[in-house]
Length: 517
Image 1 (cartoon, rainbow, N blue to C red):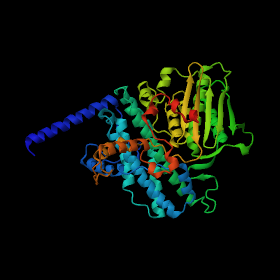
Image 2: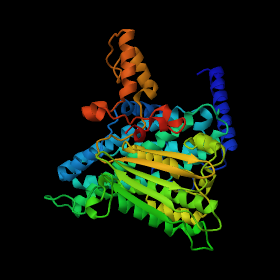
Image 3: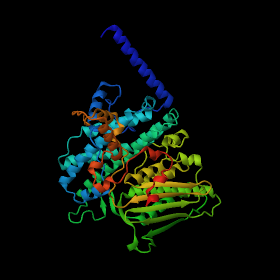
Image 4: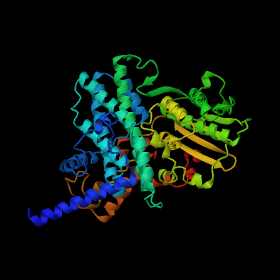
């Protein structure tokens, strides 16, 4: 290399280093990786540097997994597979989970790489990026699972990854808060980015926790004739009771209500009304039962009831609280929950940005994440954490509830009357035939745009000349169906659970299935 070329190369490197240092000083003084005691196991990879030569080969490996289709599953598929569990099927499940986690992680890593430079170099965002790369490499280098001991080690890896994943949301929230101020308010790219991150994070936890639960059940509780005697198939409970989940969520709120009112034992009453087939349910035979992940539904109802209690107590500080009404009903395909309060409602300005992470970050809604290192996974731990934080709120409870509600094809809608109160409506499918709502569209990455435009296959190894008309039809078909339809039955293909940009504009009430049904 000539002296002139070497000098130019060093100049470019110095400019880039200076730019990075300025960006990090602007955003935060927090180091990317804290002390070794705090750093997650999967983040301690020195090779994960965006400017290292090895990173080029990492991206080549990443492309191989991005080119593979994501395989969203249904609750019914999880239940049927889990009920017929044996050692051979457990090992097949382990290898499938390993590859599926790699594919889903690859999509999210590519999302990080497509962020604007000033967002991607934020210390908190870069921390999560390295965390994802570490998880990806840990799974990729794990050998195929062929024996029981292999599966035991794989489950240990999944537990470590789940523990490391508790660091993700606080870091993302802090990075978003610091980046949103420099982002054009009319662009909603950060909303789409964070929504995909959170939905995919939920999906990976479902896969990992389900496999771990099946492995533990096979070792301890498995009955080859009746299956799981306690009603659980992995983390899925096949006899979820609507009334029991409401009661548990209600009691959990009451356990921690003291953080709103220390000097009074008076709390807003929560009145529950359950109707089944048009009649008030008075007996166990009228109970509304369905298969679901109870932890997700408990999170939804806990957040709605906690908000209702909090705002009711703020609106009526003198006591004599109006009751909070919880109504539960069901038909053959869905279970419905309504939580109504008289807590004063929301102003229009607040309501319009209710579901926008970017807009809420700009007004400081996520500032309390600076005091949180991890976000607990279970609703009991989250309630305890909220109790310790007292009046300080993280600001993601309602948005996470919406993600949980939509994950299996349901929905959460909020209507408010400023000055009076708020109604929240939740619809939960009870048939288990809706595929996971991952918020992933294959055409969102350039590799898919290029393959569509060139008429080539996804892998790029075969090329076939196509007319412009055929290309347009293919693009429309991809946009309307998504990557998962070939794995679904004709009935499931009619169910649209894909994430669209309309999810982030307004409240989506005009598109609600609850209004149409």
